[in-house]
Structures are given as C-alpha cells and as structure tokens.
Amino acid sequence: MKTYLRMFICVGSSFILLPIFIIKICGIEVGTMSVDTSIAMVKEMDQDIIQEETLIGILAKEIPYTYEEEALKAQAIVERTYMARRILGIQKQGAIVGYTIEEMKALWGDEKYQEIYNIYKDAVQATRKQLIMYDNKPIEALYHEASSGQTRDAKSIYKQEIPYLKSVKSEVDEISKQVTLTKEDIAKKLKEAYPNLVVDINILEQQMQIVKKDEAGYISAIQIGNVTMTGESLKSLLDLPSCAFKMYNSGDKIIFDVRGIGDGIGLSLNGANELAKQGMSCEEILHYYYADVTIEEYEVQS
Image (tube, rainbow, N blue to C red):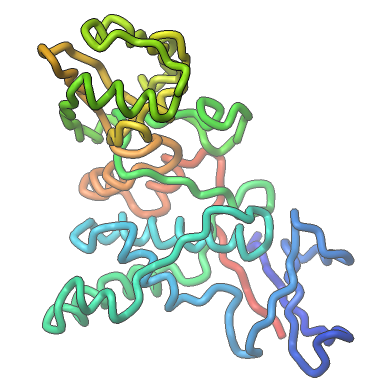
C-alpha cells in the first residue's frame, strides 16, 4: 500500500489569503501540529512537497557523476528521504545544501555542464517521489563515503537502537589510507582540546591505548594519557578519514592505517556503487543497507 503525504490548503488568521499546506502521513489526518507527523509549509499550489530540482544540486555535491546509474538512483532516494524527514519536522538538524547552477558550471565547465547535469537529473526523475519508509515515516537516511568493510550499528554512536540502521557486511568496500602525523602535532592538538591532558611526547604511542571497538572495527573508546575519548572525537581532532584504524610507531611520528571514510552508519556510497557494478538495482541496494524498510511514493492532493 502506497504511503501518501496528502496536502490540504488552509488559511490561518495570521496568513490571510496565503496558501498553507498541512501534511498528512499514510492518510491519517493530524489535528494538531505534531513534530512527529506534520508541519505547516508555505508553498505554491502547483508545487510538490519536495522540490525535485533541488535534489539535483544536492546529488551533485554528495556523489560522483561517474558512479553507476543504480547507485545514483539509490542516492537520489536517500537524499529525498533525508529532506522529507526534515520538511515534516521529524528531524530538525542536519540540513543539506547542494550546489547551485553557477557552482556546477564552475566545477564542470560550460562544455560538460549540461551532460553531467543530465546524469543527475535522470537519476532524480527515474525515482521521482520515492521515499524510504519505516513504520509509516521517512527514515533517517544516514550514509557515508565508504565503510571499513562492515557498516556500523547506529547504537555504536547514538547509544540507542534505530531498527533500520543495523550493521551489515560491506566487503566490497576496500578503501584504506595511511595518515602520518608527528607526535608533536598530535600532542599539540590533544592538549588544545583537553587542557588537563597529561602525556609524554617521547612515549606517546604507548600512552594511546584502544579501549573498545564495535562490531565493525570502529574504535568506540580510546585512552590517551589520563583522558578517555570516543574514536569519533579523535577522528575529528586529527582529521582522520574514519575511526576504524590501527596505529604504528615510526620514530617521532605515528602512522594511522585507516579503513573507510566517514562514520560508517547507514548506506556506503562506495559500497552502493560496487554493488551496482555487480548488478544490484537501486531498490536492492537500499534494502541491503537499511533493514526492513519499504520504498514508497508520496502523492500530492489539492
């Protein structure tokens, strides 16, 4: 059964003669403005809840145009779902701003602009109005550039169960990178973030002890001197690709052997592309990375 986001026109006393659309989910009308299920939006009468043209610029910013068609289509649905969740007021933070036409022309050049633009446009149009749903709501469609070889359970970061964001194998992800930093630079950044930190730069590698890793090999906790922090905190502090890493001493430097790019939650962009190369459709890719979801269309009714 399709999920419908029905839109009704109301005129409020403070918005005289201005059309306001009230969104309903799954045909269940919401009498009050609950952030869980509805939000009032000022729209033109002939516009959809989600501006498809806006998605093109977002897609261009988030995924390479050289990726497989099915991977691009999957990401178009992901971005539309991500936007819908915020438009509905279910989630308020984390809005995405895509490229403008001027930025895309500057990035690709006038000669290639239309060709590349059409690649993204085709992916958006082919998936028009499709959303990823769980329990009658758009999911929090999180994604990352590449996993460590396995995606993470959302509980690893958010400390709560999110039923559709479960750890899955993503062995097609084979992206790794070595990052070499001097012990002096590491100690400086650590002390700036943690003024009470006590470390000895001469034996820094011995004072950096991994306390816990999650099921996908990402560091959940690491102790450095007298401070314990999350792997994500250290990743951000040292500008590492991910917090799935091993450390090696190299004189006055430490080498971080890092797997994956990003936080490892949800869909892997690189993994989706590799699965598309193996013949998976965009729907199959989405079902692979998001557990027990459905792909449905919304409809607009005046």
